[in-house]
Amino acid sequence: MRSCSFSYGFDLTEKPTNTEDNVTSRSRQSHSSISSTSSVSAPSFNQRKHVVKELVKTQADFVLDMKNVLTAFDSVNLKVTESNRYSLLGNLDQLVHVSDAISMEFQKEISGYSDDRLGDACIAQCMSSFKPSINEALKTYILNFSVDASTKNPEIQTYSMLGLKIYKMNVQIY
Image 1 (cartoon, rainbow, N blue to C red):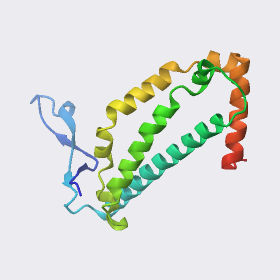
Image 2 (cartoon, rainbow, N blue to C red):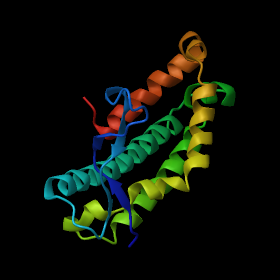
Image 3 (spheres, rainbow, N blue to C red):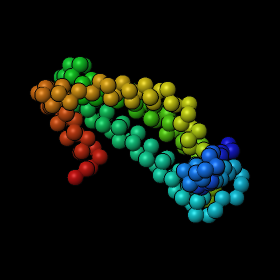
């Protein structure tokens, strides 16, 4: 298990920088830096535990949803050019791959903690090694998306409608 440092809230502490005006010299500083082995108030720890659970679940749900999107569009019985497919989906497969790796790292991190100590998990540290790959995948995805190409091209529109229909059937969305 890792040891994390937490900071809970901020304290307005007066730090005079000019003896004539103490009011404008207040600065925001964190009031506690707490090691995971330290005692943390129950409400703060329970909130952190809830956030950790929610982050792990949200990441896993995102990966599952995006895999379902890719599966649905791969199932479309319509010949589309690779260029048109890329115009709609971009590098979603790359984004899913990186997101899945992040999700597995989250699962690995929380597996070392009992449910009552889940607030000690260091989820943010898990993300640090993925920063370059997730930034690149997101940048590529965002920069290559074209609303005009997706909305004005009949082939892409048909492909999009069929893929969405398959997706809804597979995940039983109403």
